[in-house]
Amino acid sequence: MAEAPPGRGLLDTSVVIDLDAIDPARLPAELAISAITLAELAAGPHATSGEDERARRQDRLQRIESGVESLPFDDSCARAYGRVYAAVASTGRKARGPRVLDLLIAATALAHELPLYTRDPDDLRGLATLLEIVAPDNRAERETGPGSADAEEEL
Image 1 (cartoon, helix red, strand yellow):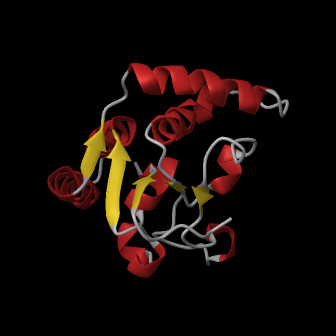
Image 2 (cartoon, helix red, strand yellow):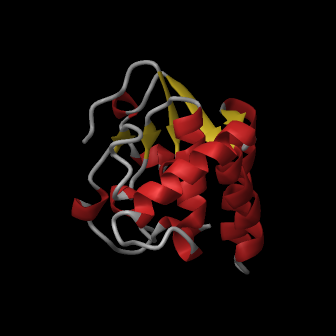
């Protein structure tokens, strides 16, 4: 898993949050996000009480809104979600709860026939037969410390 670059690709929220830390050569030439990612980013400034962090998150949201195409979650994405749900359930994992937003983003990639770029490929186990999943870096190997919170905590 990790080929893709040229062309167009869908970035999940974990990639968008850490976009500045990822080598651009490991990303597609044309970036897109799901409206689901846009929703997560829009919630981000409201999910923190720190003024500096709120401003940083608002800045990220505005940069992404103005520079990256947002693909709507439409009927074709909804139908693709049925396939995503079935693939995840067939592995014995739950396709609801905390991972549902990741799976809706995956359904967007599937419906638009785009590779999905994520820093959390483990969250998408069971989907490799449906869509191309690209890890632009190996998050598991990077150092953890201040400022390297998981995407969900970062929102």
